[in-house]
Figure 1 (cartoon, rainbow over the protein chains, first blue to last red):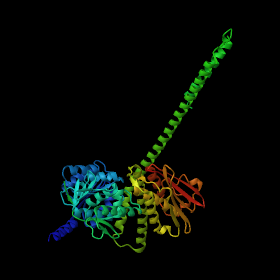
Figure 2 (figure 1 turned 60 degrees about the horizontal axis):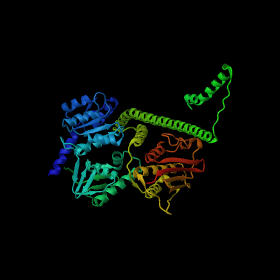
Figure 3 (figure 1 turned 180 degrees about the vertical axis):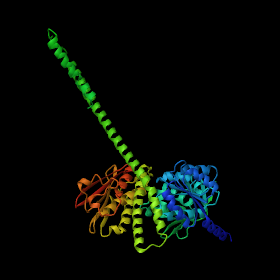
Figure 4 (figure 1 turned 45 degrees about the vertical axis):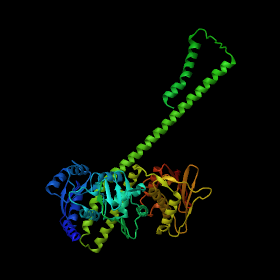
Length: 250
Length: 303
């Protein structure tokens, strides 16, 4: 019974989800707000960081799409202030910086996801839906957890180490970053391009081969059978998905 | 030499001339001086003075060279910083309008459009995506130049085998003869330290470039060897070649040579190769003869 109830809950959540779109560029909000409405969301627009903070109280959005560079109060500051007072409303940052270091920092500060401008609006909708599906309201996202557990696998994100059956496993730095990204995005279909962009910081065509090589490395070290996986599932023609129940641990 | 260098150098000469004039004109008698000394003392003194002069001038020369080199480096650093800032500003100014255009175009296609309109919208969409891609690629290149490089042991022989087999599968290399020549005797190619994913990307770009400027029937040869301190990787082709006047520019962002017109590409492939190799402490160069072909060489420090 439980899974069915969750499904119904999620569907109604999606149908009525309230979005707050924060960007100082009217040319963008005027085009994007109607698009998001048509995609089935209730949308409100805020033109700067201060307005955004006020709207989070009066409008109580289910998710905030937040631009970074804005007058008065920038997006990063809005994110920090909300998280400091314990407000865990999911946030997608529209980043102005393409560097993976900066993006990693945004995630460490408590953003749920980010998307680089310019983006395909359909991609934004897909990300919003994914986050609404996974987020447990009022809870810090997995991207903020220091230690995560999935079955016998434990990933210590602060020390950047992983353990299988309490034994440390040997991973290359890239494979470790990939595992970290996968385990913080469980149940999400992650395309090779998206993994490249998020973990490597570039997504040139040859890179899809690179992703496959690292996934193979992870599977080998984790002893995961691609035919009957416990951790990483291949979605033919689309990408990969981290399966298995992920929990925060200490 | 700086002006004060000349003053110092000519000071003894000036003093001599002054004393000579004074002695000839002002003094009633121009006294003759006889200096007596033994040969040993004279040789010693002469030797010391000449050595001193040589050392002083060499020091002076080395110092001015060093200063000159520093000045050039500072100018180059400033130029690359300016270029980076310019690209960042360009990126920043383009991405908001592009985001609005993409959203607007997507709004247009929500309702079914008449055929001729649908065609127009789709053409505009393709062009917007092209600019977006360019903006993203420029940004990635700038990010790469600043990001630290991962250091793991890389077996270049395996990596080259992997890239060559990947490239052979691509339609762009159809009917080109691609060969890989790796050393086996007396020892195989030494390992290097670096980021295998980025190195793969760099070598792939060189091969991709070679494929673009060759035609069916041409040969592409990938050769690797070590010269004692470096690993040298050469990607040689029997393609169109590059005119001498263009050779220096092909490593620059967005440069598209005469022969590159009509060949698809962003003008960012080779700059990316250079950025990656230089991040690994290596260097890139090329030799080319029009209508005969081109050799791209990559030097990477061996482990």
